[in-house]
Length: 182
Image (tube, rainbow, N blue to C red; front, side, top):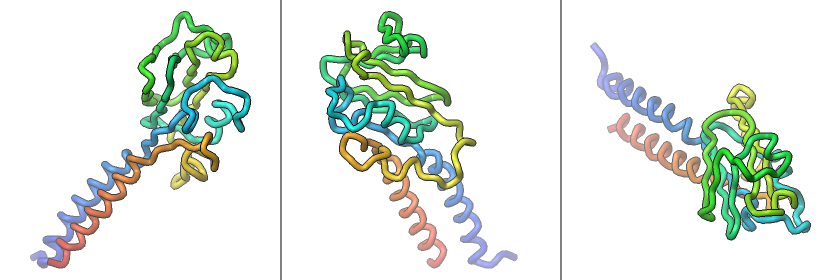
């Protein structure tokens, strides 16, 4: 016959582990703010690095998203050739609302350019490589700092999901401990 502690422990442990497993995928989803506080704008030449330099300092995964903030501009998702030529005539997707969140739904390369004439040629374009999960070392952080840098123009990974998941995990752990000893 099972003791009272075993009767409470195993179902509660199973519930806790199930919830932790479900939340583990949410913990790894990040929202990256393209361009930091300046947003998605035509480069002025004063930047410490361009959009592609910023992208190389981050690790993007399926489920992550890019947040584009812009005025009097647009974001076009294009193929590799259109990216290289700054060709805005036939984008895969076009966003013009000024607040665009683009979620990565697959691994591979994604190409973004500005739809405003002359902006892409001036450097308002971005290549993002979304990694396959096996390319990431277990337990590795996305970068040394959210957004990959230490200055305002480089930062931008919003860890909203991670914070919420961590708080929920702490609450569940507390409930688990309370249920064990009551």
